[in-house]
Amino acid sequence: MLETLLEPLQYSFMQRSLLVAIIVGIICAVVGSYLMVHRLALLGDAISHSVLPGLAIAFSIGANIFIGAFIASIISTLLINLIRTRSPIKEDAAMGIVFSAFFALGITLITIIQKDNKIDLNHFLFGNILGITLGDVRDTLITGVIILLVVVLLYKELLFYTFDPLGAQAAGLPVNLLNLGLMMLIGLTIVASLKAVGVVLVLSLLITPASTAYLLVKRLQQVMILGVGIGILSSISGMYISYFYNLPSGPAIVLVSFGLFILAFLFSPTQGIFSHPVSTFSQPSIWRELKSLIK
Image (cartoon, rainbow, N blue to C red):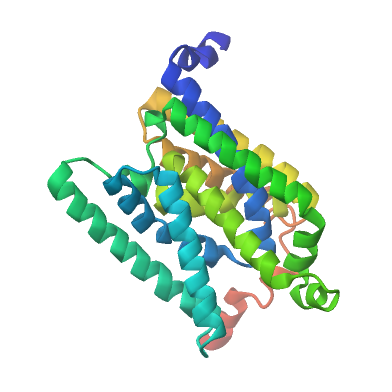
């Protein structure tokens, strides 16, 4: 058993991949906890799709793709806020408009680049964690440290803002700056996760571990800690499954994370379907409504 667990670690590319997967599992769970509490899952999806033009442009000019992706995420965030605040369009509609336009632009730019370079850039979409280099490990580690430091320093303020934005504003907190800071944290987290799972699957790592933890515990600090454990477990397990069964790494990590969520959804001691079959969340029952319509 021990030999089986140690076998992948004899390869340097697996060592790098596992390290990046662990870092991504940690930061996604921490930032995802704020996203889930603040009900901003769609924003995470919007930003993850919006980084694609930045990736393509940075690649074409020979710049660091992490920097290009981060700049694109900031531009998309500012544009969403501009549409939301300067027009009657609601935030969810603004997100849909911006992320679809940025995603289409990114696909177009990637197609143009591939005509001249004949290089496969599809790993931006679906991840390529097994192709991680030492430079990628360095960039991901630096980004992860920055994210965790900001969360530690602004934990109370972000906690107050995410749970009660109006109360935070009344208390004199700079809610606009906190909102921008949270958007930047989301952007950094997505950028750090690109090589692991790509822009298509990154939302799952942002939301699923935190959501799984939320089914098991209630306090935000507990959700973060348990979510980190779930994120790390999902990342390591997904990498091992990918190695032994020759599966794509990003989707394997996401599927393990989803499997853990299903287990919590079914068997959570306080909210599981099987452990608490009758709950307020199931009322009114869809089956009773269907029966009443048939009658």
